[in-house]
Length: 168
Image 1 (cartoon, rainbow, N blue to C red):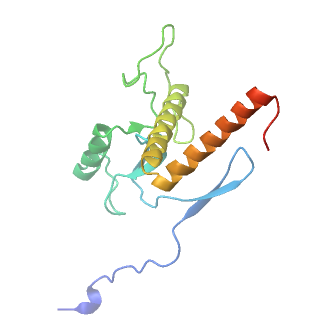
Image 2: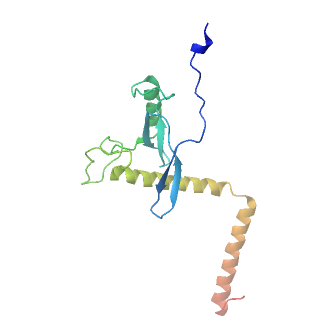
Image 3: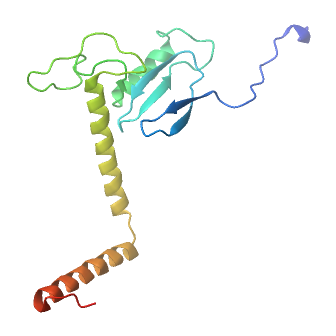
C-alpha cells in the first residue's frame, strides 16, 4: 500500500470568517459567517434570524439531499419560517382584511413586510416569556426588597395625604 498516494486531511487553522454590519444606531456588529455552501436563512420561534446549514460537509451542494431535506423539514415542524418567503403567501400567517400577500422574490438581505411583523411579534412574545421566567426565579430577598419599596411608597403617600407634606 502506498501511503504517499493517500490525500492528507486539510488542517483548518485561523478564525471563522466574519463580516461587519453597521447598525442603524451607528455601531458596527461583527458576526460570524456560516462557511457552508448549502445554507438557508430562517426565522426561529423566538424571532431571531439565523442561517441553517443544510449540509454536513463542505462538499455537499445538493439541496434535495436527504440530510438537507430532513434538516429543513425538522426546522419547519418546530416553527421556523423561511426568511426570503412571504409567510402570508405560504398560508402561515393570517392576513388582515384588505391586506394582500406579497408577490415577487425576496433575498437573504431583505424580507417582505409581513415577515418583519412576524419577527417583531415573535421577539415581543419571547421577551415576555423570558421576563416571566426571570420573575418566577427571583429569590425571596428580591421579593422582600420589592415589598419594602412598595410599603415605603405607601407610607409616603399616606403621610402626604394626611399632613400635606412628605415625612422625610
